[in-house]
Length: 144
Image 1 (spheres, rainbow, N blue to C red):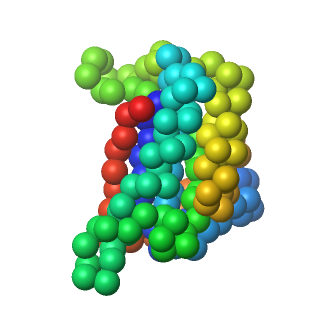
Image 2: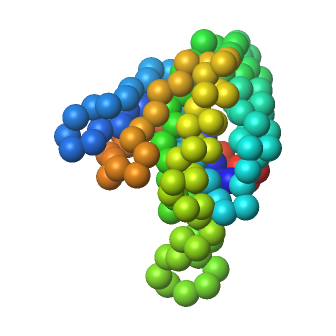
């Protein structure tokens, strides 16, 4: 699984011109479920994401996590992250999991994270417009 986490002041997802999800302060998370991912991968990510200390404390250091700042999560399925760009010029998404299976794991990730943090999400498989006001900017890439 590949994940891009962006610390945001706000973020929203629109489908066909209508906002379907939005958050204020928190994390915008782009999620790519890959063919070798399983429920263990999902649980590992769900445990780590709320613990990442990527919010500033009173001294300006990244020393607080999403739970400490009372933020929200916006998860967006992003299968295009599976292409690493090392070979060729046309993206290949062979490493992405079949959409029907990927959706189940994406939903499981949302459910697991929602046990600790308010979670909103995009529409799996839809063409989405994602609006992000990046805070910092602060962006991290993770492989699970």
